[in-house]
Amino acid sequence: MIFPFSRYKIVGHSMSPTLKPGQTVWVFQWAYLFSKPQAGEVVVFEKEGKEMVKRITEVRDNAITVVGDNKVDSLEVGSVPVRNIVGRVLG
Amino acid sequence: MKFFTGLFQPKVAYAHCDVPCGIYDPHNAQMAAHTVLRMTKMIEDLKNEDEKKFVHQLSRLQKVKEEHAELLKSEVRIIWGDYFKAENYQDLPLLHEKVFKIMKLASKVRQEVNLEACNELMSATLEFAEIFYKSKGLEPVRVKSPYPTEGELVIYK
Image (cartoon, rainbow over all chains, first blue to last red; front, side):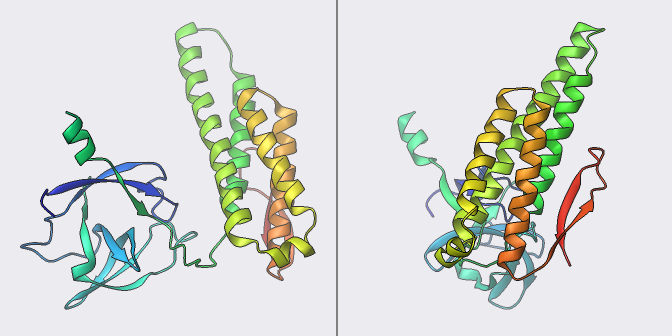
């Protein structure tokens, strides 16, 4: 996490129409160094060795619950430890 | 410059659970088929009275037609590739043939302004939706769509 920003290409439909497949986004990796994640924010996080992008629906002490915007194509991934968040999607 | 380009090469962020989650729906493919049909009809109805307006509107219609034909292909590919399993293929021998037909027709409707091909694509997409619902043990039913195309949609009982 040397650099505050990194770029990600979206693969899949679970965040449509907010993020479309093939779209490139910037991710602010220092977003939660001094503040806590908030419900409604779109984040990239690591889950079972893969980096995924979803929207936060709930924030608890050390974990978040995330879900995709496209309910047709998305499963609630469930609880994700805050330490597994890569960063917040900008824009 | 190369250093910075390399530094910010995009990584992949998956916007699908890929568990696989088992949540698949042919509705988006059907909507895309309706959109392609609608765009094609609108292109055919365009009147070239003002060249600038004509070119502008044609560009917009063409763009949406292209995008939705590609979206249709993508939606069908995901269901075909991720949802259907080998046991489905034995029960549904027409599946590959239907998907292949959809891929070819979706390309054809991009390449041409062809209402006949659009209607064929619509039929094939509805039949694909019926195959999908049947594979889940659901009874598919065709209803009149609420869209200006006045075509049908496949849902299930």
